[in-house]
Image (cartoon, rainbow, N blue to C red):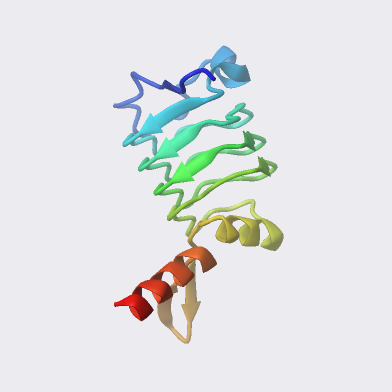
Length: 147
C-alpha cells in the first residue's frame, strides 16, 4: 500500500478563499495527510478528499460543500463553522474533532459524526455543555472504575 502523501506549502494560506487548483480538487488531494496545519477559511468545495487525513488541523469556516469525504479522517481537528452542504460521508472518523456552528448537516448526519467521535456544543438551561462521543464516555467511565 502506498504511503500517504503529506501536503506541503499550505502554511500561510490563512484566510485564503481558494488555494487549490481545479486539478488538485479533482483527485490530487486523495490520500493526503495534513498535520498541524492552519487551513482556516479554505475552499474545499467539490474536492475529492477520499482517504485524506487531517490531524490536529484547524479548518474553521472551511467550505466542504459537495466534497467527497469517503474514508476521510478528521483527528483532533477544529471544524467550527465549516459548511458541509451536500458533502458525501462514508467510513469516516472524527476523533475529538469540534463541529460547533457547522452548517449543512442534517440531524442524521450529526448523529453519524458524533457516533464516530465528533463533538458538538449544546446549550442546556443557559449553560454550555460539551457533548462527547459514546466511545469516549465509556473510556472515561472505565478509567474511573479502575482507578
